Length: 173
Image 1 (tube, rainbow, N blue to C red):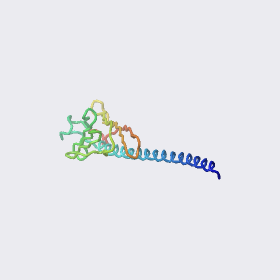
Image 2: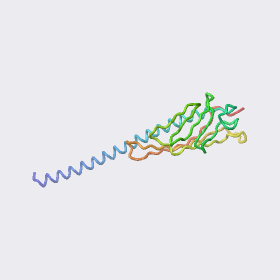
Image 3: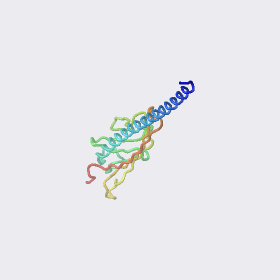
C-alpha cells in the first residue's frame, strides 16, 4: 500500500464512523424522548384514574358544611382550577392547582399528586347537570395539560388530557 491509499482509506473509515456515530446518537436521543413520553403518559394515567375514582364516588351535600350550597354534589373553586366534593368516607375533599402541581386536600391531610419534575400548566373543572332544573346526572369535565423536562429528554414533553366523569350512584332523591 502506498501512503496515499492508506490516507484515503483512513478518511473513508473516519467518514463512515462519523455517520454511524451520528445515527447512534440520534437513536439514543429518540429513545430518551420516548421514555420521557411513556413516563408522562403513565403519570397522567395514574392522576386521571385517581381523581376520577374519587370524583365518581362523590356524595350530595346534606349539611356537612363542605360545599357552599346544600343539595349539590360538586363545587368548582379557584375560578375553575379546583373541585370540592364530599367523598365516599363523608370527608370534604378538594383537587386544585397549586404552584403548577395538582394538590389534594382530604379532611386535614394535604398531598401533591404530581411529581416535582412535572408541571401542570392547565387544570380546569366544569360541571354539567348540577341543578335539579336541568334533570341531568351531574358530570365533571376535567381539562389538564401536563409537561415534563427530564434530563433524559432533550426537550419539554407535553400531554393534554380531557375527560368527563359522572357519578357512580344515580343522583335521585
